[in-house]
Length: 103
Image (cartoon, rainbow, N blue to C red; front, side):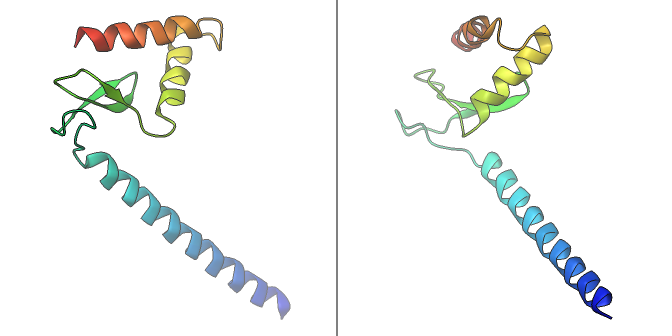
C-alpha cells in the first residue's frame, strides 16, 4: 500500500517540476523576444545571431550586450565548429569581435 502512495507522490512531484520547467522556458522565450533599449543611447537594440546565439547590439555605438551564459555558449559553439576545446580560445574571441565590428 505504501508503494501506491509513493508512486502517487512521485507522479505529483514530476508533474509539478514539469510545469515549473515549462513556465521557466516560457519566461526565457519572452525575455529573448523583448527589444531592449541600448544602455548607451536608449534606442532599441537590434538582435543578431552569432555562432548560434542571439545577442543584442546597439546600432549607433555598435556596443554588444550578452545575457548570462551567452559568451560561454558562443565559445562552446566555436570550439565545436573548429573541433578543439581551449586551444584556439583567443581566436574565437578575436573572430567574435572582428565579425561584430564589421556589422
